[in-house]
Image (cartoon, rainbow, N blue to C red; front, side, top):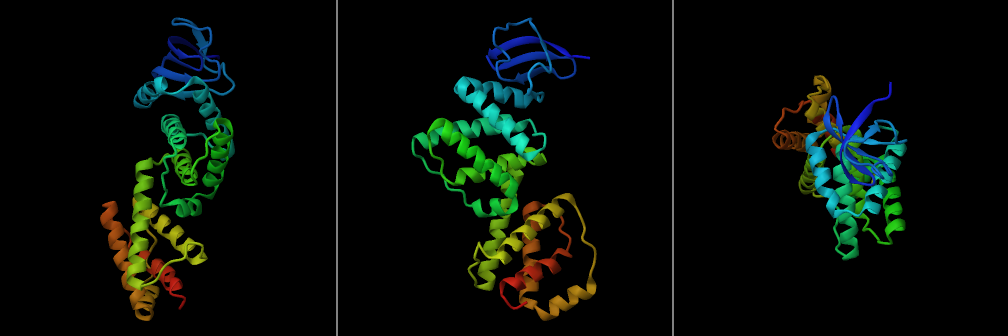
Length: 280
């Protein structure tokens, strides 16, 4: 049965606020959705081929507050980009991306027009950890540049990839950025303690980053690896420098996350560290 909503307010040609029996007030976004409509009119929930529903009150309020600062043509273009991202990722996007990505792209365009450059210190790591999101983000940047005529710095691809990853995993950008900062801190500790300069294009560096990311994720979820006492004893005996460094890194991770970290992580991290010294 078709669900009919009652329009509370038409914000522009593409955005309306309507009454929903379950969510109360909701924001509906769709190309031409608000055209020639007014308060009190009925609107089928699934009228548009693709309509985004903002049902969270905080997200709705933030999105409505953004609208006066964004041109309608840009707003509907970003709406099209979100549909493109959803299609390419083949996953439903968390609704918070409407606010986050709309805000980010609008201000990124303004920065680019003013030639204000922003570096992204985690660009390589983002590409390594989220390759699919990174490729889709590159396509998004290309579309924005073609539509607006502005040129984005390479770092914008990484920032947009993080927004996409956040939207498909339901992880907050705050946590994602916190984890990247932790990985960066641990990489610096590794370089200092082993007195080496890690090469980011090296396959062992790529494996290390992947492992640190998975270890952080396991710690955040409370996942245990299981005990391997014989392997731990062998690694501690054969590679004491890397084993002790791995233990140190696990303690750093534990302090930063404020969560217990399975000490079995030390074994696997030791192996990755030993590879980096080219002695394993």
